[in-house]
Image (cartoon, rainbow, N blue to C red; front, side, top):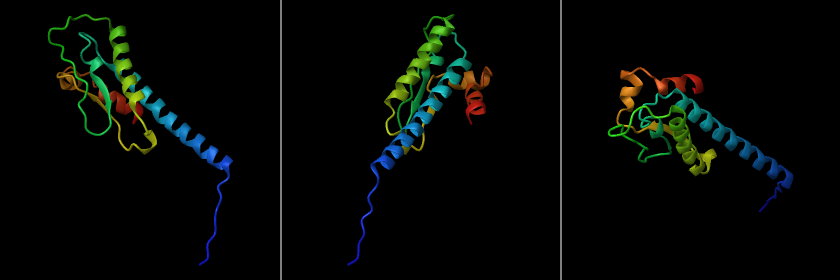
Length: 132
């Protein structure tokens, strides 16, 4: 039997680890940019739509709030911040981003389709145009 042993230089392992961390940070930064675009492009009346965004990996129930019985004329900045904070909570829960093949931005509000198409806000189209 013939064999050989290859030793990996510890400094090379550190470089690989650093590269993996940079790649994961880049994915995380992109998710944050997408979240900011989505909430910034969203209309705010009751706040239900803008606070119904979620990131999901695989199957799962999306965040969804109805505008029924909610007061209108909500503070747009406060509602957008709440929506952004919700998405940041989702991002912070994501683990092992380098082995994740799909992350979905969803809006589970019952009136999401109406906001996107009927009322013409095209929030998801804007996100796709900006972020691909």
